[in-house]
Length: 179
Picture (tube, rainbow, N blue to C red):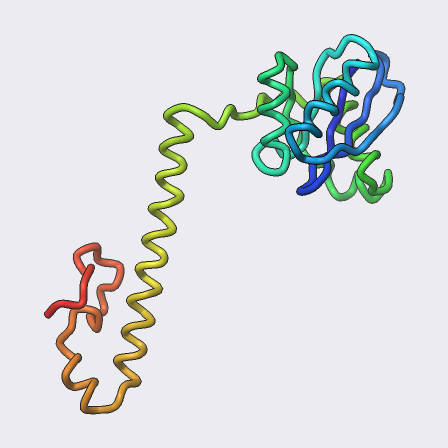
């Protein structure tokens, strides 16, 4: 058997096909640890599980992908069907789940999901936080500059020499409001 999963925020739609591509059944499961456990039990109840195609292993399906891999299930990352194919075949969660399973069985989907652990994930997390901090800092400097520029003349004259009024907001040396 091959499984396919269409992932969403609160529930995942799973489908099972046999080794020659016949659609067997589909069912929705919550995106909780218990839901992942029930989904895997449900998949295995249909026979020997070859692999599971999961949409969105880097987003909505990341938790499920980790759970399946931790339970020695081969997980294949499946791209969302293109819009033209979705319009031609209809759009529903069960259809998308069957499409994910079929993509694995036919070999159209062969991607290995990222493990999202180790040094690479740690560096990615640090880069995300740094990018956010730099953006917040720049926005704060722009807000302070605007407040000073629109302040009453007496206040503006007292604050004119502050570094925040400098045009080099992107310069990493501009980090405080000191003269």
